[in-house]
Image 1 (cartoon, rainbow, N blue to C red):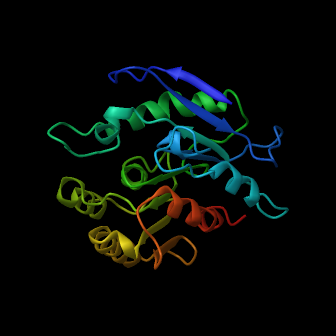
Image 2 (image 1 turned 90 degrees about the horizontal axis):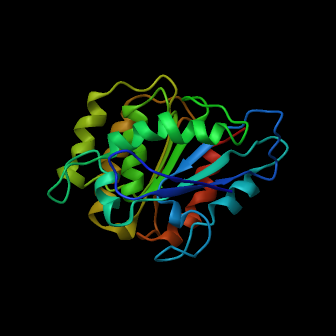
Length: 242
């Protein structure tokens, strides 16, 4: 189901989001929401530079008698403006605009989703997923707006942005009251793996209860949609154990 096109105040052009109802969707019950950045890569291969995640298929496979799948929302990025809008820090000689995008997601996009499907909002119900810049955005959003986003799947996050500014930010924030964090990276990703390991060590030091934090170093992993597509099912099973 297509949503939009939306105009995000202060951002050029318009964009759309796509809503996927899992096969176990029951309109009489409120479902959780998984909001994915880089919506052009979330579903099929069309519109993606290196193939899509086919995340809707993984979400459908998640649905079992003991596990209810989330409603999936893929928000398209702003093309040439993708880097700045997914960065919370100055980047490429300009300001990062993620805070503005997140406020729009909370105030406009998620209520729009709730008007079309029976979903719960707030930290207990809404998780984020993203890779590379989207992974950075998801991780930041969880600590920046813990009232709105209670779970994060950060795949190969671009932790190098602004000389690793995300480290100082995360370390300065308390652990959210409701927090479930999945973090991964591939050994073939060079320096990104070193930074991801550093972030994993910090998060582990916070004393997450068992089952609330998962660090997944991928021995075969590289920096591409194919690797994130392969790792997505396990990430989803972690995020939605029941």
